[in-house]
Amino acid sequence: MKALPSGELQFPAKEFYLAIEACQRLRESAYPSMSVVNLSLGGEAAPEGAVLNGFKRAVASAREAGMSIVAAAGDTGGSVLFPASYSPVLAVGAADAGQAPGTLCSFASRGEGLDLLAPGCDTLTGGLEVAFQDTGEPAFGSGASQTSAEVSAVEASIDSYNPELTPQQTEACLTSSARNGALDAAAAFDACGLERIVQAGEQAERAAQQAPESSPPPSHSEPPAQPCTGAIVCPPGVPATPSVSPKLGVFEPSCSPPRLRATRVGRGVRLRSSSVPKHCRLQARIRSIVHEKMRWTRPYTSRGAVLTVPASAGDEIEARFKGVAEAKLSSTWVRVAVSHT
Image (cartoon, rainbow, N blue to C red; front, side, top):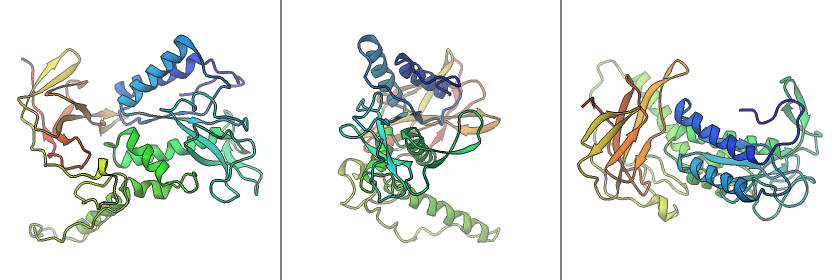
């Protein structure tokens, strides 16, 4: 979604939150995998009154829906600009790619509210290679606009590997793994436990390719998984060590698969469970055609026994109970049969 027409440099503050709301509507209607809104823009002063309140509501709603808001800190050499200065927004400043990690560009906005740094200039080459205006031709440029786009791309990549991560968890992986405040993409992946997920997938793929057609059933005496050390979020089935955050690494009782009654209501499907086990939450996902491909949506979650999802006729729905402490000891996904009565 392009923020400004070609040639225009001013962006009305009201458009900040209208764009976020538009992105959330797109996520809910057609792009369920959209998880990050990037704002490569900023203004000297924060708006006031109804505009500021509208922005706060839009950010809160987007984060509740599972979207992270990333914004450029600014290029003034002074304090962090709005909307990056608003605390729920991840503010990214410009670092010098030609110097030691954490070295700010001379023009970079800085100080209170700055959450992360990423390459925004390079004193060794004169700039960073960027796409220029509408032509798409490569050019050299500098600025915080690039930095927020870089962080947004890394965060979206992490979410694509594990769509169940919340905005807070993914952002924690980015900031906690930074080197002198500067983005370290590989370390961020590792902090979210994704290195083990990727390795497990690669091992399973190699095993499937090497296994004979009539291979015996898998043995149940496999060695236990190695502990997940130092990760913000551990992958499924991998035990956490005490070095993991106690809020995200605490194990809990495993949830049993749900038994649901599903009925079509209006433009969606209502799922109702007779009960919800303690420490578990009802969760559902939809498999539908997006861009001519079948894709699963990010899971919808309810704090109670009822969950309504925007599923159309022909969509496949699966549900499960998920552990509330993010320990990943959730039930298996079960297919949901929809009744029309």
